[in-house]
Amino acid sequence: MSVLDGPLSFLQVAVLLAFGATMLALVAAFVRVVIGPSLADRVLALDLIGLVSVSVIAVYAIAADQALFLDAAIALALIAFLGTVAFARFIEWRRGDSDE
Image (cartoon, rainbow, N blue to C red; front, top):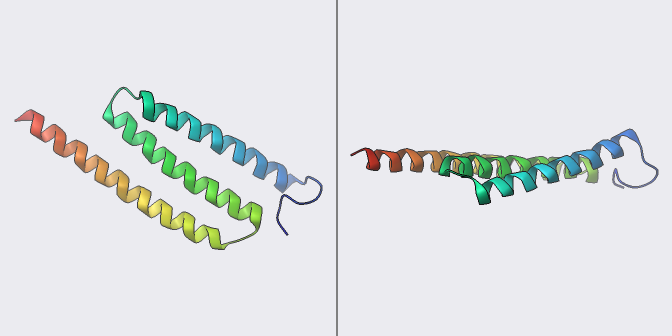
């Protein structure tokens, strides 16, 4: 039994609105990755995509009434954080080369 079965309740409406909002944020982040004027903008957009993906997994865990998906969301959040740190170090390293 999932949250999306039967007549619409407050939780079902909240889940549907959350899915819609996260999909809009995902599209906006993809647009920023494609047309971002600088590398830092693209890195931030990729970090936002990771965060929105974690949000989608968490909302799906609520909708499907399966707490197991939250473990996947936590793992994805950790990987996204490490990726952001790696990109930040790369940007710092790249700027250090151009200053010399």
